[in-house]
Length: 477
Image (cartoon, rainbow, N blue to C red; front, side, top):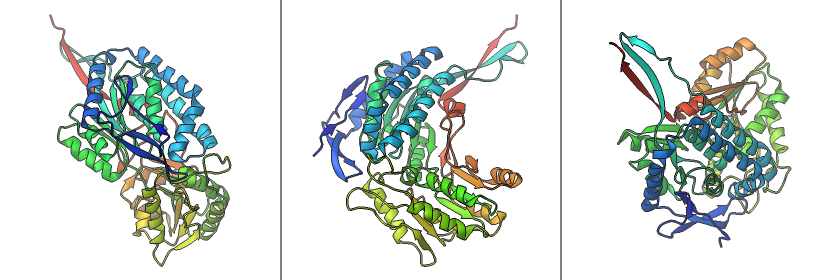
């Protein structure tokens, strides 16, 4: 029985679905229903886009300074209410409370503050006379109303990544969070109403059909989604029908290349943390290790030791690295991939569901897999690290690039020249060297190939929410 209920935020007000219909929200730590949320339909999406369209007429004319001040106030509110946000986020996702407070609130606040400042420093080509008797200059303008869809692995953080650059650039928004994690998105939207005009930011909850309505609606000029490759393809196909712009971040299968000269103990510790954090439910997670022939066996043993020393448990346990998988469907997905392990592969550690309640899965290490195996080619999105043995640098590069994804990667070596060669040839939007997973607001995050296109964070992320207009004036006598 649900003991909480969430609301849509449309036109500056918290409202139920027009139909009154709701759906159950599950606590992944227990597998039990703990809340309900609006099951938004076409009427709700229409109302949200109408509110966003009306708000755009005035929000687009605000100055960068005014948008900056609004974003700074939102960041301050998030920071001052950090504990409240962490509690709702943990209830929705099962994330450890203390770890979420330490690892997610500070970067989210920092990222909003970054875009608050970035709103005031948009750059373009210098104006000038490129044709005799004519002066040209460039205007960077907001795109208009944008539709956004966020995932369940980092509901609060991904909402920040989506709304901060869009608002900074002068756009208005209709955002749909994942059906399994509506709590922090609706709370953040309610907080934002204190500092934004009504209709500038609207949130509607619901299922995949709700997301489809948000994406296919004729109003938005851009649709941005963080999600699966399948979802991204559907969004791109839908957007093509009326030539919407699309911003896609679709997951990854990050290669983690460990050469023979790497520090085995340090690399194993860093990779295990970057692989198991958030239960491996991270599109950049360090879960596909390629190890050199001289270090492979020792590295598998070191990773297995790290796995056995890594704990998972409920949100209140301060000693765990990660909580449950987000939902039963994801638990089945991870379990299935491990259970279907081919005969030539081995489970070096873990490999089982943990506990009788909730969606917990043990820290797992798989070895002996081949490049064509589904566990290598498909995103596991769980606390499962695979290890392959490569023979030389060329094979490491070929295997690293030999997947459909292109989001993130890392190289572990003491050889600077090798690190630079690999960084140049790896077909991924980010290459870390002797580390894995740190992100900063000033640097872009986004991938190639089936990982999508467009950038989150950085000035590139802000520019993705703008359009470029050329203005030419005749100045002759």
